[in-house]
Length: 379
Ligand SMILES: Nc1ncnc2c1ncn2[C@@H]1O[C@H](COP(=O)(O)OP(=O)(O)OP(=O)(O)O)[C@@H](O)[C@H]1O
Image 1: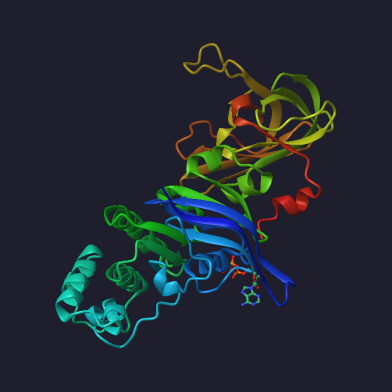
Image 2: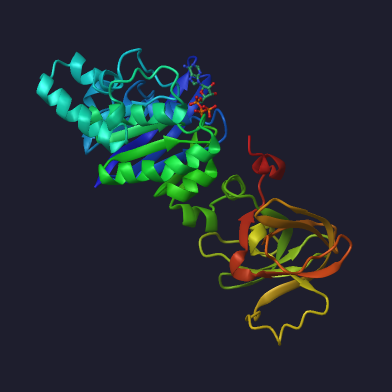
Protein backbone atom coordinates (compact mmCIF):
# COMPACT_ATOMS: atom_id res chain seq x y z
CA UNK A 1 0.00 0.00 0.00
CA UNK A 2 1.36 3.45 -0.80
CA UNK A 3 2.28 5.16 2.44
CA UNK A 4 2.97 8.62 1.09
CA UNK A 5 1.46 10.10 -2.05
CA UNK A 6 2.09 13.56 -3.44
CA UNK A 7 -0.27 14.82 -6.11
CA UNK A 8 0.95 17.73 -8.24
CA UNK A 9 2.67 19.35 -5.28
CA UNK A 10 4.03 22.80 -5.92
CA UNK A 11 5.65 25.10 -3.39
CA UNK A 12 6.62 28.64 -4.18
CA UNK A 13 8.20 31.33 -2.02
CA UNK A 14 8.46 35.11 -2.34
CA UNK A 15 5.02 35.54 -3.94
CA UNK A 16 5.67 32.92 -6.59
CA UNK A 17 9.08 34.23 -7.60
CA UNK A 18 10.92 31.16 -6.22
CA UNK A 19 9.54 27.80 -7.32
CA UNK A 20 11.13 25.42 -4.81
CA UNK A 21 9.03 22.36 -5.72
CA UNK A 22 7.39 22.16 -9.11
CA UNK A 23 4.37 19.91 -9.74
CA UNK A 24 5.74 16.79 -8.10
CA UNK A 25 3.82 13.51 -8.31
CA UNK A 26 5.30 10.89 -6.04
CA UNK A 27 4.44 7.55 -4.45
CA UNK A 28 6.42 6.02 -1.59
CA UNK A 29 5.46 2.54 -0.49
CA UNK A 30 5.13 1.36 3.06
CA UNK A 31 8.41 -0.02 4.45
CA UNK A 32 10.60 1.46 1.75
CA UNK A 33 13.85 3.27 2.47
CA UNK A 34 13.91 6.07 -0.09
CA UNK A 35 16.74 8.48 -0.83
CA UNK A 36 16.24 11.95 -2.20
CA UNK A 37 19.16 13.22 -4.27
CA UNK A 38 19.79 16.32 -6.30
CA UNK A 39 22.00 19.38 -6.56
CA UNK A 40 21.97 22.00 -3.84
CA UNK A 41 18.83 24.13 -3.94
CA UNK A 42 16.81 21.69 -6.08
CA UNK A 43 14.00 21.52 -3.49
CA UNK A 44 14.80 18.42 -1.42
CA UNK A 45 14.33 20.01 2.00
CA UNK A 46 11.21 21.84 0.86
CA UNK A 47 9.72 18.55 -0.36
CA UNK A 48 10.46 16.82 2.96
CA UNK A 49 9.02 19.71 4.93
CA UNK A 50 5.89 19.57 2.80
CA UNK A 51 5.47 15.85 3.47
CA UNK A 52 5.97 16.30 7.20
CA UNK A 53 3.59 19.26 7.39
CA UNK A 54 6.15 21.84 8.52
CA UNK A 55 5.08 23.80 5.46
CA UNK A 56 2.00 23.54 3.28
CA UNK A 57 2.11 23.22 -0.49
CA UNK A 58 1.04 26.20 -2.55
CA UNK A 59 -0.89 23.80 -4.79
CA UNK A 60 -1.42 20.04 -4.67
CA UNK A 61 -2.19 17.34 -2.12
CA UNK A 62 -0.29 15.22 0.36
CA UNK A 63 -1.78 11.84 1.28
CA UNK A 64 -0.52 9.60 4.06
CA UNK A 65 -1.96 6.14 4.48
CA UNK A 66 -4.74 7.08 2.07
CA UNK A 67 -5.80 10.16 4.05
CA UNK A 68 -5.51 13.66 2.63
CA UNK A 69 -3.29 15.44 5.18
CA UNK A 70 -2.46 18.50 3.08
CA UNK A 71 -3.71 20.86 5.77
CA UNK A 72 -3.12 18.61 8.79
CA UNK A 73 -0.61 19.79 11.43
CA UNK A 74 2.73 17.91 11.58
CA UNK A 75 2.10 16.18 14.92
CA UNK A 76 -0.95 14.38 13.51
CA UNK A 77 0.90 12.78 10.58
CA UNK A 78 2.80 10.00 12.35
CA UNK A 79 6.07 11.35 11.00
CA UNK A 80 9.32 11.87 12.87
CA UNK A 81 11.73 14.39 11.41
CA UNK A 82 15.40 13.84 12.25
CA UNK A 83 16.98 17.23 11.70
CA UNK A 84 20.37 17.98 10.25
CA UNK A 85 21.31 20.04 13.30
CA UNK A 86 20.43 17.55 16.03
CA UNK A 87 18.32 19.48 18.48
CA UNK A 88 19.54 17.69 21.57
CA UNK A 89 18.81 19.17 25.02
CA UNK A 90 21.28 19.26 27.98
CA UNK A 91 19.33 16.55 29.81
CA UNK A 92 19.94 12.80 30.01
CA UNK A 93 19.92 10.61 26.92
CA UNK A 94 16.80 8.87 28.21
CA UNK A 95 14.99 12.17 28.79
CA UNK A 96 16.06 13.42 25.36
CA UNK A 97 14.71 10.25 23.83
CA UNK A 98 11.37 10.41 25.62
CA UNK A 99 10.98 14.21 25.55
CA UNK A 100 7.90 14.24 23.30
CA UNK A 101 6.14 11.52 25.30
CA UNK A 102 6.73 13.53 28.49
CA UNK A 103 5.34 16.68 26.94
CA UNK A 104 2.28 14.77 25.75
CA UNK A 105 1.69 13.53 29.33
CA UNK A 106 1.99 9.76 28.85
CA UNK A 107 2.24 7.57 31.96
CA UNK A 108 5.69 7.07 33.49
CA UNK A 109 5.41 3.33 32.91
CA UNK A 110 4.69 3.76 29.20
CA UNK A 111 7.50 6.31 28.82
CA UNK A 112 10.03 3.97 30.45
CA UNK A 113 8.93 1.06 28.27
CA UNK A 114 9.08 3.09 25.03
CA UNK A 115 12.34 4.84 25.95
CA UNK A 116 14.15 1.64 26.85
CA UNK A 117 12.96 -0.07 23.71
CA UNK A 118 14.04 2.82 21.47
CA UNK A 119 17.48 3.10 23.07
CA UNK A 120 17.94 -0.67 22.72
CA UNK A 121 17.08 -0.51 19.01
CA UNK A 122 19.85 2.01 18.33
CA UNK A 123 22.38 0.43 20.72
CA UNK A 124 22.32 3.18 23.37
CA UNK A 125 20.67 1.15 26.14
CA UNK A 126 23.75 1.41 28.37
CA UNK A 127 24.04 5.17 28.00
CA UNK A 128 20.59 6.38 29.05
CA UNK A 129 21.93 8.35 32.06
CA UNK A 130 24.62 10.23 30.15
CA UNK A 131 24.21 13.88 29.16
CA UNK A 132 24.86 13.83 25.40
CA UNK A 133 26.76 17.12 25.32
CA UNK A 134 29.98 16.77 23.35
CA UNK A 135 28.83 13.54 21.74
CA UNK A 136 30.05 12.77 18.24
CA UNK A 137 27.65 13.02 15.32
CA UNK A 138 27.30 9.24 14.99
CA UNK A 139 25.96 8.85 18.52
CA UNK A 140 23.80 11.96 18.22
CA UNK A 141 22.35 10.44 15.09
CA UNK A 142 21.47 7.27 16.97
CA UNK A 143 19.80 9.39 19.62
CA UNK A 144 17.83 11.30 16.99
CA UNK A 145 16.55 8.02 15.57
CA UNK A 146 15.79 6.64 19.04
CA UNK A 147 13.72 9.72 19.73
CA UNK A 148 11.85 9.22 16.47
CA UNK A 149 11.16 5.55 17.25
CA UNK A 150 10.09 6.46 20.76
CA UNK A 151 7.46 8.82 19.41
CA UNK A 152 5.79 5.85 17.72
CA UNK A 153 6.09 7.40 14.26
CA UNK A 154 5.94 4.97 11.36
CA UNK A 155 7.50 7.39 8.92
CA UNK A 156 11.03 8.65 9.43
CA UNK A 157 12.29 11.68 7.55
CA UNK A 158 16.00 12.43 7.70
CA UNK A 159 17.52 15.54 6.25
CA UNK A 160 21.08 14.55 5.53
CA UNK A 161 21.87 13.17 8.96
CA UNK A 162 25.01 11.36 7.78
CA UNK A 163 26.24 14.34 5.83
CA UNK A 164 28.28 15.65 8.67
CA UNK A 165 29.62 12.27 9.74
CA UNK A 166 33.10 11.02 9.26
CA UNK A 167 32.76 8.96 6.04
CA UNK A 168 34.00 5.81 7.81
CA UNK A 169 31.49 6.10 10.64
CA UNK A 170 28.86 6.87 8.03
CA UNK A 171 29.69 3.70 6.11
CA UNK A 172 29.50 1.56 9.24
CA UNK A 173 26.31 3.12 10.49
CA UNK A 174 24.47 2.99 7.16
CA UNK A 175 23.81 -0.76 7.33
CA UNK A 176 22.76 -0.49 10.92
CA UNK A 177 20.40 2.30 9.98
CA UNK A 178 18.90 0.20 7.21
CA UNK A 179 18.45 -2.74 9.59
CA UNK A 180 16.76 -0.53 12.17
CA UNK A 181 14.36 0.80 9.53
CA UNK A 182 13.54 -2.68 8.26
CA UNK A 183 13.26 -4.28 11.72
CA UNK A 184 10.98 -1.51 12.96
CA UNK A 185 8.88 -1.59 9.75
CA UNK A 186 9.45 2.10 9.19
CA UNK A 187 9.03 3.99 5.96
CA UNK A 188 12.03 6.27 5.64
CA UNK A 189 13.03 9.14 3.39
CA UNK A 190 16.52 10.48 3.59
CA UNK A 191 18.13 13.44 1.87
CA UNK A 192 21.78 12.88 1.14
CA UNK A 193 24.58 14.21 -1.00
CA UNK A 194 26.26 10.82 -0.75
CA UNK A 195 25.23 8.92 -3.86
CA UNK A 196 27.19 5.83 -2.91
CA UNK A 197 25.23 5.55 0.31
CA UNK A 198 21.93 5.94 -1.51
CA UNK A 199 22.93 3.27 -4.05
CA UNK A 200 24.11 0.92 -1.31
CA UNK A 201 21.17 0.91 1.08
CA UNK A 202 18.22 2.59 -0.66
CA UNK A 203 15.23 0.60 -1.92
CA UNK A 204 14.43 3.54 -4.13
CA UNK A 205 16.14 6.73 -5.21
CA UNK A 206 14.45 9.95 -6.27
CA UNK A 207 16.44 12.43 -8.33
CA UNK A 208 15.36 16.06 -8.29
CA UNK A 209 16.54 19.09 -10.20
CA UNK A 210 15.18 22.65 -10.29
CA UNK A 211 12.22 21.66 -8.11
CA UNK A 212 11.18 18.83 -10.44
CA UNK A 213 11.21 15.11 -9.81
CA UNK A 214 13.25 13.70 -12.71
CA UNK A 215 13.20 9.99 -11.94
CA UNK A 216 12.32 7.56 -9.19
CA UNK A 217 13.43 3.94 -9.33
CA UNK A 218 15.53 1.23 -7.70
CA UNK A 219 19.25 2.08 -7.52
CA UNK A 220 20.06 -0.55 -10.10
CA UNK A 221 17.48 0.58 -12.64
CA UNK A 222 18.35 4.22 -12.15
CA UNK A 223 22.00 3.44 -12.74
CA UNK A 224 21.38 1.24 -15.75
CA UNK A 225 18.50 3.11 -17.35
CA UNK A 226 18.70 6.79 -16.47
CA UNK A 227 15.84 8.75 -18.03
CA UNK A 228 18.09 11.66 -18.93
CA UNK A 229 21.72 12.56 -19.44
CA UNK A 230 21.58 14.59 -16.22
CA UNK A 231 20.35 11.65 -14.12
CA UNK A 232 22.96 9.29 -15.60
CA UNK A 233 25.74 11.77 -15.08
CA UNK A 234 24.59 12.70 -11.60
CA UNK A 235 24.58 9.07 -10.55
CA UNK A 236 28.03 7.80 -11.36
CA UNK A 237 29.23 9.75 -14.39
CA UNK A 238 28.69 9.17 -18.11
CA UNK A 239 30.75 9.20 -21.26
CA UNK A 240 28.98 11.25 -23.87
CA UNK A 241 29.37 10.98 -27.64
CA UNK A 242 27.45 13.25 -30.00
CA UNK A 243 26.20 11.89 -33.28
CA UNK A 244 23.23 11.40 -35.58
CA UNK A 245 20.89 8.55 -36.48
CA UNK A 246 22.15 7.04 -39.73
CA UNK A 247 19.85 4.02 -39.95
CA UNK A 248 16.79 2.65 -38.15
CA UNK A 249 15.70 -0.96 -37.86
CA UNK A 250 12.76 -1.37 -35.49
CA UNK A 251 13.98 -0.18 -32.11
CA UNK A 252 17.64 -0.40 -33.13
CA UNK A 253 19.23 2.90 -34.05
CA UNK A 254 22.55 3.13 -35.87
CA UNK A 255 24.36 6.21 -34.62
CA UNK A 256 27.31 7.76 -36.43
CA UNK A 257 29.48 9.62 -33.99
CA UNK A 258 30.28 13.15 -35.19
CA UNK A 259 33.35 14.11 -37.21
CA UNK A 260 33.89 10.64 -38.63
CA UNK A 261 33.77 8.85 -35.29
CA UNK A 262 32.71 5.22 -34.87
CA UNK A 263 29.26 3.81 -35.57
CA UNK A 264 27.22 2.11 -32.87
CA UNK A 265 23.87 0.35 -32.91
CA UNK A 266 21.79 1.26 -29.87
CA UNK A 267 18.47 -0.19 -28.74
CA UNK A 268 15.77 2.13 -27.43
CA UNK A 269 12.30 0.94 -26.57
CA UNK A 270 10.78 4.03 -25.02
CA UNK A 271 11.93 6.92 -27.16
CA UNK A 272 11.54 7.14 -30.93
CA UNK A 273 14.23 8.81 -32.99
CA UNK A 274 14.10 10.07 -36.57
CA UNK A 275 16.58 9.41 -39.35
CA UNK A 276 19.33 12.08 -39.31
CA UNK A 277 18.22 13.32 -35.89
CA UNK A 278 21.05 14.58 -33.68
CA UNK A 279 21.41 12.38 -30.61
CA UNK A 280 23.74 11.71 -27.74
CA UNK A 281 24.95 8.24 -26.85
CA UNK A 282 26.12 7.56 -23.35
CA UNK A 283 28.12 4.85 -21.63
CA UNK A 284 29.46 4.14 -18.17
CA UNK A 285 33.27 4.23 -17.79
CA UNK A 286 33.24 0.70 -16.33
CA UNK A 287 31.35 -0.68 -19.35
CA UNK A 288 34.16 0.15 -21.75
CA UNK A 289 36.78 -2.46 -22.64
CA UNK A 290 40.36 -1.82 -23.67
CA UNK A 291 42.33 -4.17 -25.91
CA UNK A 292 45.91 -4.05 -27.15
CA UNK A 293 46.28 -3.89 -30.93
CA UNK A 294 47.43 -7.53 -31.07
CA UNK A 295 44.73 -8.89 -28.74
CA UNK A 296 43.61 -12.37 -29.83
CA UNK A 297 39.81 -12.26 -29.51
CA UNK A 298 39.41 -15.86 -30.71
CA UNK A 299 41.83 -17.28 -28.14
CA UNK A 300 40.04 -15.44 -25.33
CA UNK A 301 37.66 -17.30 -23.04
CA UNK A 302 35.25 -14.37 -23.09
CA UNK A 303 32.58 -14.00 -25.75
CA UNK A 304 33.27 -10.75 -27.58
CA UNK A 305 30.63 -11.33 -30.26
CA UNK A 306 28.70 -8.15 -30.97
CA UNK A 307 31.18 -5.80 -29.33
CA UNK A 308 31.79 -2.50 -31.16
CA UNK A 309 35.49 -1.74 -31.54
CA UNK A 310 37.13 1.57 -32.36
CA UNK A 311 40.72 2.79 -32.62
CA UNK A 312 41.96 4.99 -29.81
CA UNK A 313 45.07 6.25 -28.06
CA UNK A 314 45.68 6.34 -24.32
CA UNK A 315 46.17 10.00 -23.40
CA UNK A 316 45.91 9.84 -19.60
CA UNK A 317 46.07 7.20 -16.91
CA UNK A 318 45.84 7.27 -13.15
CA UNK A 319 45.00 5.13 -10.15
CA UNK A 320 42.16 6.10 -7.83
CA UNK A 321 42.95 3.32 -5.33
CA UNK A 322 40.41 0.72 -6.23
CA UNK A 323 40.32 1.61 -9.94
CA UNK A 324 42.65 2.25 -12.85
CA UNK A 325 41.28 5.08 -14.97
CA UNK A 326 42.30 5.66 -18.56
CA UNK A 327 41.33 8.56 -20.78
CA UNK A 328 41.37 7.45 -24.41
CA UNK A 329 41.05 9.58 -27.51
CA UNK A 330 39.15 8.31 -30.54
CA UNK A 331 40.18 9.12 -34.10
CA UNK A 332 37.70 12.01 -34.22
CA UNK A 333 39.31 13.54 -31.06
CA UNK A 334 36.37 12.65 -28.77
CA UNK A 335 37.54 11.22 -25.48
CA UNK A 336 36.21 8.42 -23.28
CA UNK A 337 36.83 7.79 -19.61
CA UNK A 338 37.50 4.10 -18.94
CA UNK A 339 37.42 2.53 -15.48
CA UNK A 340 39.01 -0.83 -14.76
CA UNK A 341 39.46 -2.63 -11.46
CA UNK A 342 42.85 -2.06 -9.87
CA UNK A 343 43.80 -5.67 -10.69
CA UNK A 344 43.36 -5.00 -14.43
CA UNK A 345 46.42 -6.72 -15.85
CA UNK A 346 47.08 -4.73 -19.03
CA UNK A 347 49.12 -1.80 -17.89
CA UNK A 348 48.74 0.48 -20.89
CA UNK A 349 51.03 3.47 -21.18
CA UNK A 350 50.22 6.98 -22.35
CA UNK A 351 50.58 7.04 -26.12
CA UNK A 352 49.68 3.35 -26.60
CA UNK A 353 47.38 2.61 -29.51
CA UNK A 354 44.46 0.47 -28.36
CA UNK A 355 40.99 -0.65 -29.34
CA UNK A 356 38.06 0.49 -27.23
CA UNK A 357 35.16 -1.92 -27.08
CA UNK A 358 31.55 -1.29 -26.06
CA UNK A 359 28.60 -3.67 -26.21
CA UNK A 360 25.46 -2.13 -27.69
CA UNK A 361 23.44 -3.18 -24.65
CA UNK A 362 25.64 -0.93 -22.48
CA UNK A 363 24.93 2.14 -24.60
CA UNK A 364 22.04 4.54 -24.00
CA UNK A 365 20.66 6.94 -26.55
CA UNK A 366 19.12 10.35 -25.72
CA UNK A 367 17.57 13.17 -27.71
CA UNK A 368 20.10 15.94 -28.24
CA UNK A 369 19.34 18.39 -25.43
CA UNK A 370 18.74 22.11 -26.00
CA UNK A 371 21.87 22.85 -24.00
CA UNK A 372 24.22 19.88 -23.61
CA UNK A 373 26.59 21.83 -21.37
CA UNK A 374 23.78 22.67 -18.94
CA UNK A 375 22.47 19.10 -19.05
CA UNK A 376 25.90 17.83 -18.00
CA UNK A 377 26.23 20.43 -15.22
CA UNK A 378 25.77 18.74 -11.87
CA UNK A 379 25.13 21.95 -9.90
N1 LIG B 1 11.61 29.91 3.24
C1 LIG B 1 12.09 30.16 2.02
N2 LIG B 1 11.95 31.38 1.44
C2 LIG B 1 12.41 31.65 0.21
N3 LIG B 1 13.03 30.74 -0.57
C3 LIG B 1 13.21 29.51 -0.06
C4 LIG B 1 12.76 29.16 1.25
N4 LIG B 1 13.08 27.86 1.47
C5 LIG B 1 13.71 27.44 0.36
N5 LIG B 1 13.80 28.42 -0.56
C6 LIG B 1 14.39 28.32 -1.91
O1 LIG B 1 13.80 27.19 -2.54
C7 LIG B 1 14.77 26.49 -3.31
C8 LIG B 1 14.86 25.05 -2.82
O2 LIG B 1 15.44 25.04 -1.52
P1 LIG B 1 15.66 23.71 -0.68
O3 LIG B 1 16.28 24.11 0.62
O4 LIG B 1 14.39 22.95 -0.63
O5 LIG B 1 16.72 22.95 -1.59
P2 LIG B 1 17.64 21.69 -1.22
O6 LIG B 1 17.65 20.82 -2.41
O7 LIG B 1 17.22 21.11 0.07
O8 LIG B 1 19.07 22.38 -1.04
P3 LIG B 1 20.36 21.88 -0.21
O9 LIG B 1 20.81 20.60 -0.83
O10 LIG B 1 21.36 22.99 -0.44
O11 LIG B 1 19.95 21.74 1.23
C9 LIG B 1 16.07 27.27 -3.17
O12 LIG B 1 16.16 28.15 -4.28
C10 LIG B 1 15.88 28.03 -1.89
O13 LIG B 1 16.64 29.22 -1.89
